[in-house]
Length: 315
Ligand code: ADP
Ligand code: MG
Image (cartoon, rainbow, N blue to C red; front, side, top):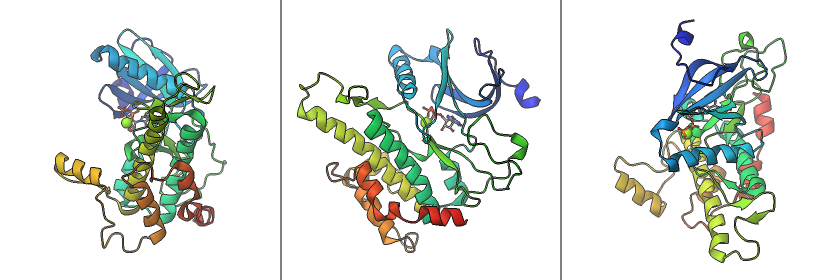
């Protein structure tokens, strides 16, 4: 196997056999890998170059891992294992064979309203779990950090296993989003590198001393949650039309547009998109965080409650 022979060897990573590179970050390479003990099947491994990082950056990696350790949700990438060598951190993750949602937007230009709803609902479920159950804000929601576990287009003889690691490679049909019974499959939120714990999920209290919490801390918590809601608005906008709500060649101009919340539902691209979807987006892309929708309000909006099951099941 040509690809495998070109794979780098990392000390202390003997259990996992690297198969191919799937992506990179500033300090990391992400690989698809196989478990030599066959317990997990295929996984993704984020190999972080510890030796290039200062102590602050290293601490952030440990925080990312610590946050992921406490999360358990079908729409959040699971942490399988964490280890380190002298020079590297190895973050072993549940594999999302479909890759980034970003690439599907590029491939399809834009998503239908039903497919967009199917996607954003799953993102919203993960956010509801983070904000309401775990006391975590993600702070980096974007199409590059939304991965997915595809449901194959070609019907297979054997029922499709849902768990990564169980899948039978030969059985995987070509993936066509929006077709087949699953819409696009299961969306998984990844990359907790910028995430923050806002309250202690074991005691259900804000981080810090119980009863002595200042109002600005309580407000801080609310503001940080609303950051994820804004980002969800940007993702939903992008899904529906294929380009982001805020864009400019110049960073200064772009920053100014964002600060003012200056975006439009640009014609002709938005002409055929429902007013209900636009209404929902406008409640997310609201500059005042106090007025911006919370995750509860989002989930309660008629466009979200819509007819997702009926439409995706019929496809
Ligand atoms: P960074 O903090 O550098 O952005 P990420 O955790 O977002 O690191 O990983 C970088 C890229 O690697 C992702 O955008 C994605 O393309 C790929 N990737 C990360 N985790 C997985 C995974 N579990 N399954 C498949 N691909 C992944
Ligand atoms: Mg990322």
